[in-house]
Length: 337
Image 1: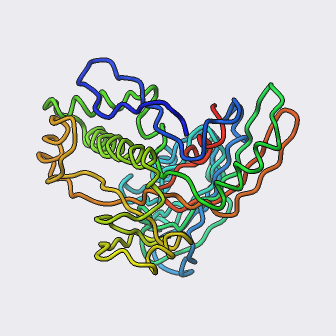
Image 2: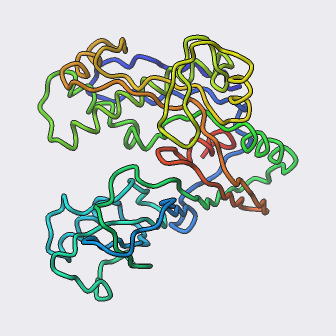
């Protein structure tokens, strides 16, 4: 286990503090590597987990994009189809510095000819139809193919058991560093909101997400330190794998322990909101003012179909994660980047 001590309560400051090196569950990183050296080194493919109906008033576009963020692509689709930006739907935000494939929905009000779409870095892979707009969080999972590049020779014999640990036991379900902005810059946004500054709607939403994510990660790091991030303890809530379903642990019996051991259920942590007791206090006041509803998130992340190939200068990883999970939470249990 990493011996670094997480910083749990950043102080209000004009300069964002560095992000803590939240504790790892499977030991210190085994090597140093570069990620995203080129777009093809980080590939993400969205899996809806269900089929569009084949009819209806919405075009469902499965789009491959390179070097473009999701919201920018949605605006380009809206402009091409001559519909308001807000009427274009997508299920999740995907990385910009990557090759990503994901679904978008666009109303068919003007019957756009998608074969003529010409947007740099954007390609329509397939086209379906569906009855309703695609909503956030509607997909089941994301499939990742990631290339790690390194200069020093790595010890394959040490990597194999670590990968096996990750595949069999999962990893702490941290929010990835991208949630906090470049160099943790979104922490300044969180403090601005807490200090009463009026923010545009998107910035306000990001500030609230940053507060909740930072507090969650700090609490999860404390559970990692206690070796309870992957075990139910009295007073926990349990999250059902692959769903947002959460239930109280009234009595911790052998059946529940067994279900947790097989990763059918996971301990769940709090996503703070109004009525929570988060620190620093000015963050909590911001949540109260915004009337944010408290929620829960699994402390453990199950990693599906994890495979790897090791070469002299690079390693390729392939795996699948449920929606809302971060690939970097898997990578940080393996290497520094």
